[in-house]
Length: 116
Image 1 (cartoon, rainbow, N blue to C red):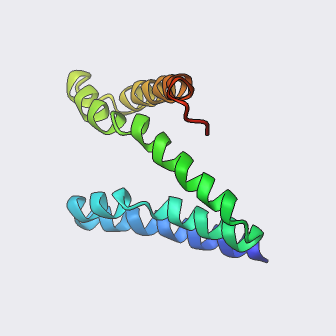
Image 2: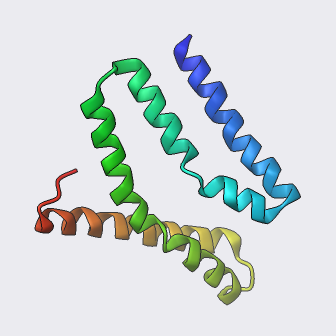
């Protein structure tokens, strides 16, 4: 039952952001930029395990993994302009860049003594 509740609430969040974006790109962007998915994931994780250390480590990991995802939001619109609106190609390239940056982050962090 709890999995069904998680699925419904999370799905409604994503659909809600999409609907808000149809009416106002600014408000949609603002809502999507809020760490709602991370917060919900943190809540679901804690409700299931009541493990403070796991919740803390999850939050720490999210912080460091947000950093390599940010360039995607600059590269994607730039690619759209460069490819004359080739949405799926631009999205794929921006996503691949993000994957590369995730791997780079996971390679660099241990060099600074940060373990995720």
